[in-house]
Image (cartoon, rainbow, N blue to C red; front, top):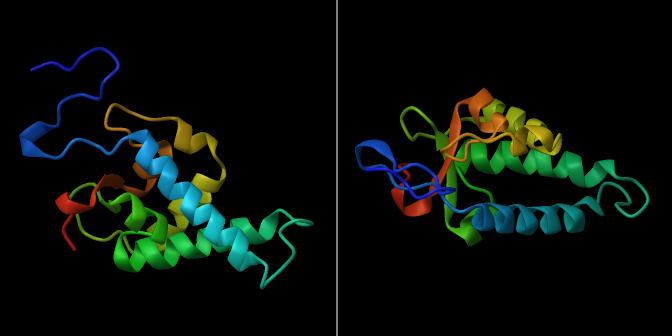
Length: 134
């Protein structure tokens, strides 16, 4: 069965369709807002640009690495799991994913499953929270 023009391809073997870009962006906005608020503890986010970025990378490493979702992903009901088996990706891969996400361009280079380059490099995929295994 083919997908309408512009829509992501139908998932193979019963997999859930990828979450919309709106849900992913909403999760990122929630996470970014939390990082800006929290980064006030380690620096001045209005004077320096690096504290929120460092906090975002640390947040991704901790939350995605251990729980497969950040607070923003929890609100948006999405998870970041291993592409092959749906398990957690671990702290190191989650940290690398966060670093690549902060570079922005890798996140914009997506395939048909809406996997950005940052996801392909670390072997992860964003899925609806109900379809992910822990």
